[in-house]
Image 1 (cartoon, helix red, strand yellow):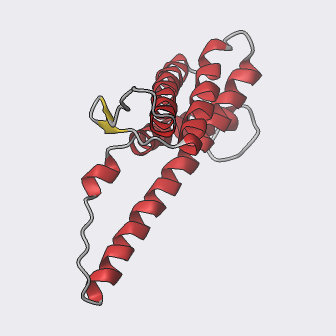
Image 2 (cartoon, helix red, strand yellow):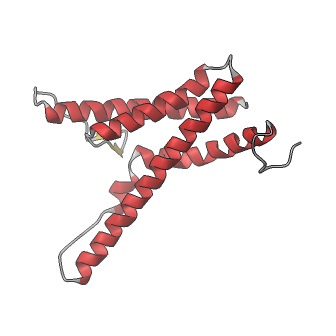
Amino acid sequence: MRIIARIIAGILGVIYLVYGLIALYNWFSSTFPIGYEPFNVFLTLNVPGDIGYSIALITIGSILALSLVSYSSEVQSLSALTVGTFLALALFILHILVILANIADVLILKSIGEEAEFNILSELQKIEFYGGLVSLVLLYFVLRELSNKGLIRIFKKK
């Protein structure tokens, strides 16, 4: 597998892990008020304090990081990259659906005369959006490698 795909996956995995741990800290500090303030924004990206969100980010981050550290086993590295990429893309698609649902909610409320507003920039400033965009690049590497190994037929063999 190409080293650039492993490096991108490793960096993205570490970023997902960091944001997942921050989200876990935010959840812990808001659930158990023991004097710690949550980080609402970290490096200009919003980090909610949600336990499910943090579990998803930590899972994706550890799987993507596994593709970097398992350089001795090509199969393990490729499978970790494949699963991590598809999980990151699933979270990305879910986030896009949430944004579309929020837009539809505001449009429906405004159509019946209610006061409603929606800031799309705050929704786009989350790690699952930017991680999903990078995962689209990783998807190319995954599909190319699976095609080269003869597991799927998308690209022509060289």
